[in-house]
Length: 253
Length: 294
Image (tube, rainbow over all chains, first blue to last red; front, side, top):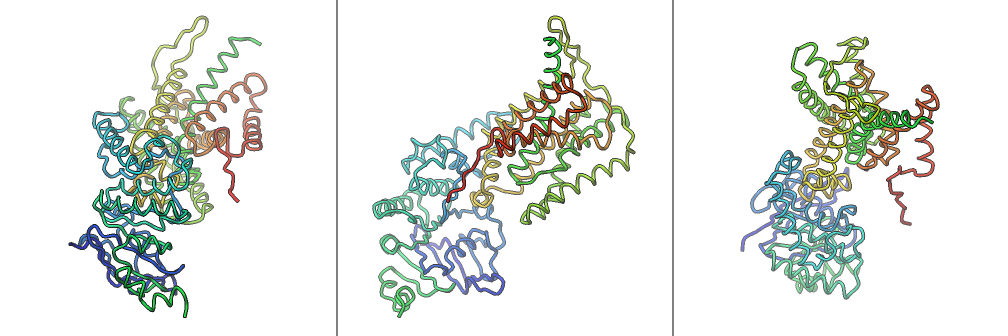
């Protein structure tokens, strides 16, 4: 199996605060990887570093061997990292299907003027992404909502739409930031199935931040535990569950 | 009340109203995407008119060629202003952007005053079509052409924003820049395109305006710009149909005031309308009042 994401000695300073230090991570093709840690451990900061929102102070991030440091977020998205957000950030005034189409932005080739003049190239591309978006919505059983405003979707569906939108960018690696936040146990269980299904159907790697231990332990093949911006432990779920330092960080002495 | 006079005033209002609407579209699009009131937008109108003047009167270019030149110059100027003046301030507080916009506006006025002096120049006759005769009265070509061109441009713009990928990207950026760029949208390019389209519309508005009022001077853009800005606010700033509605409402109110109340009162009444609208609908006629969730 080949490595999709390789992170070496990653670190970032915010003024005098070292938010992430000496962070290492390797994600393989088709792997479901969990990133856990107490509040404020730096999990979302790492997502922001991986997607180019923050520029790392030191260290290297490589996606399929291509260095990502100093690339802007839109370029990194093009290269194949997509993400969802801890607090839902859909384009709420756009319709459900338009949200997915935004994700396909870079797969549409026609030019500005072809768009204004509505040439055959415009119709060809727009028909294509309409079909592709519909297919994606069907995966999440969102197709019957395609033309309503995204903000009118129920909460759980909005979370799924965020995943659909991220998948529309055709990623190699999908980052999910607390996908189960605010869901009840039943919804969380369904979400676990969906995440596995997405990984298998789209043949991508997934990096997951989650507080819900049951979800992480249930579906992730490998887990990294973060505490105060540094890696506390890495390993399989059972290794992590029995790691003394992890237990200490979560439960105290 | 004389019905045919009323009808004529209405046509007058639609003429100036469609120009306000075209300019207001530029304000509203830029506001939607950059959350910036681009007070230099009025000056783009002036630059557009001067470009036609330079091309035809000074350089002897044919009129049909001077129009696309003027549009391209203005679109380019719009992009430059954004890159030079606004982009470095993108993460600064809004007030700095506003001051910068006013600065750019004064800069362009003074620059053109320096080059062309403040004496008005006469604008070449562009529209040489016969008037349209409807029963007992005729409508000059300037008027119906202004209206038709504006309406076509508005429809094209509306379709463009709703149906094309660039339009979708513009709407996404206007809602959430951060999320949009994480979906692979190039923010800088999208903002540039927005400025280019807004400025191109301002160039067209400038040419149409100068055809009806063929004396141009370096300050012509400021009043027109302010009126169009009011139109955008009345309709609901950031909302494209709002700019069109606001533009037509303002134009019609203006010309009816001139005809039936007093031509000196026009501006006072226009501002009064603005205040009344803002008292009852702070987000503009088509704006949504966003309720804060507690």
